[in-house]
Image: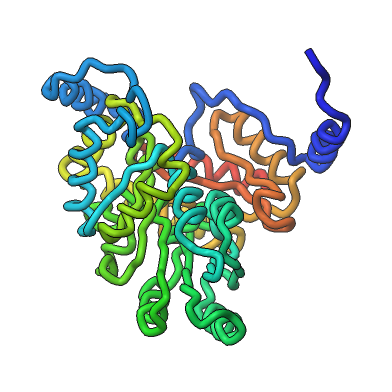
Length: 384
């Protein structure tokens, strides 16, 4: 077996020295405060049974998609799912991708053109950044959740850019590391006034935000003011895959030009059936799961305030609660201490987050009891 080239070994050694080296961990048997399974759907036996029953009802006994959707993989469950998404998310069309990463690199690699400009929130997800890099448009970041800074940067760049340039503004409805939410009403009003295209990634809002889990955009009634929404099924929905919601013409364009859609084998019928079943469950039994998650969120915030930990936490009304603990060594040490007590709370280190913003990222779930939540926060308070 050939050795890893020296320059790559040096990069590994550097990351090891900085206590930033990633590795795969075993988490079975631990009390989970790290996964994105906010509603417990990934382990829900009823949902598992509903998926199997759907495959039987549709007379589908097929292991794989057999090819890309443009060749042989566009099985009938895809059509059923995309119509379900159109109805549930009150949009004109929906196009399913294999993952949120695929959706973002497909969209941003294909839609913004060479003379166009993309303005993105500085805390935007890595998959969106990668998609922008693949594309040919110019791109600039604006300060996190700062509409005034966005307005200023848009004016500066548009004054010196081609008059025909299309402006895309990109944000998330719930940011994956801080768990906070931008002023989407202000962003939508600004983009509508200027004729800009607003793109919102709702990965961590789907299933969690809003009374029925539709996400923040629908919670605010903004679905007709958004150029495109990216939703993913690997978090609160407990399965896999993603979709881009928007106009029918956008869907047609993506089918033709999004390379991560065109050149990949489709999702298996079982995967698509799982997504369909998850949406059915969300609209019925899922409402009680959303309510329990919100109750746990309220209790979590009350508890950390009572323990005097409020100064460490980033304000958030989502299932993501981040406790800032400066330094990779420190955050790793406390994460390991909690792990030894049976609690899996992920340490998020630089360079994933900026240096000095290292954190413990608590992900809340509807399936947790208040005793577990209280105990992990009491342990955190003790170790701090």
